[in-house]
Length: 83
Image (cartoon, rainbow, N blue to C red):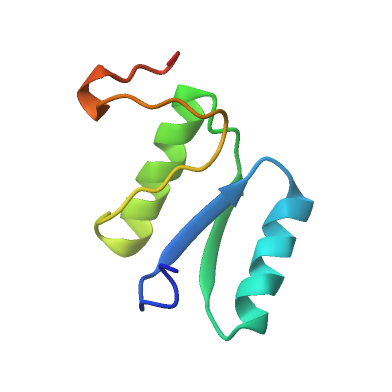
C-alpha cells in the first residue's frame, strides 16, 4: 500500500528468505522496496538500528509501520518494549 502510494519503503525481516520473498512480490507488481538488514524487531537495540539506517538512507522517516512480533493495542505513549 505504501509503495503503491509512492512512498520509499524500507523493509526488514528476521530471515533472508523473508526479505527475498518481499522483494520479489514488490518487484513483480512494479514497486521498489529498499530492504534492509536481517533484524529481529523484538529486540529494542536491533529495532533502533534498523530505524536509524532508514533515516540515514533517506534523510527522514515519515511513517513507521510495524507488523512484526506480537499484537498489542494501547495508546503509543503507554507502550513499552515489553508490551
